Length: 119
Image 1 (cartoon, rainbow, N blue to C red):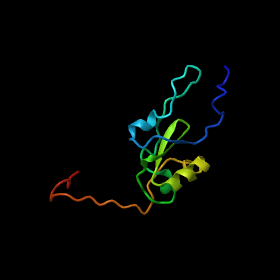
Image 2: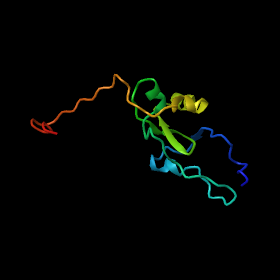
Image 3: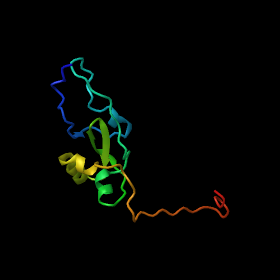
Image 4: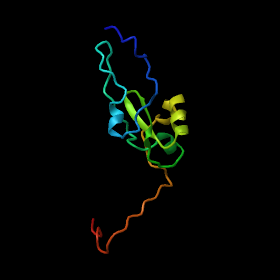
């Protein structure tokens, strides 16, 4: 089988240009329907809408659809343009292991009295 010359043999991170309209459009924006080219469908990464660059620094921040990139047919979103540019330079550094919450991340749940006492 002959590989597609238009696609590199190793994945390269690319910025998704017109993704500002929403998260759903990020999966299809920029994919051509040409018969000469073969594109795999994009999917959400394990990070979903969390910024992987911020998570690597120990902060949990939601990404924005204006700052999006795809790498290896996975879509990543970022909080700032600087985080997006850092990810495009060296994406493997930020996704070298599965996402996990930072050790100093805390959650507080509140509700009416007696709710969830036994669960």
